Length: 315
Image (tube, rainbow, N blue to C red):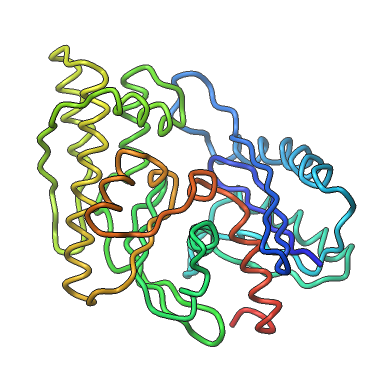
């Protein structure tokens, strides 16, 4: 018996199967196509791209298994966050597909937030799913989110409360804007991280912190100034990521002071950067996912579907 997970977010189409008995995940994912130099997609274009790609993704996923699995339940990312008014049209593609599959198979359908999926995928990858039965702090950094989260168990599931984060530009937006400025391909995270690794000299940065929050808009402006001054691209890339690290470190310290020495989890596409990860692991001992489980993926929704089946639903 396996659990099927689906996620159609910006900017990845993904599907995954989770086998609770072995703890193994099979996953297929594909980035949405974007025009050269474009900073993302309109929601209407993202919806159309997901419609085109989801069938291909599903075919690849099921063909990778030696035999057709029996599906016990379907989990899907149906909204960005579990809060009133949280909505993006692209999630309708995954939710509609999940409803069809669950109805055809006669199995339960569980709706989760994209953010819950990120947390679960990161915990699965790090071998820390047991954390969902206790209190911990999580950071979710992506193109659309830079949130500090307090995660607590509740009614057999868990709750997520935003307790900090960016007050303006998101970390992923800063990465993509600086990356495009340097001629990289969108989404720019992997290329920017590789470019930044080429700069080995010290880089001085000064984060803008406000309690457990931060401001990141200055990163783009500072990097634009460096580009006009003719600074090396590797230096500019490094400055961008070091600035995000400094803001993340400052928020981490503020949250640990406010909530005590809780375990730390870092999730989201920006957290797949080796530049940021190595420094955060060394300084704060936080837990990170493997890159493929840190960026957008459906593994978390499949794992959460197994959890929901065991607990009898999501409260």
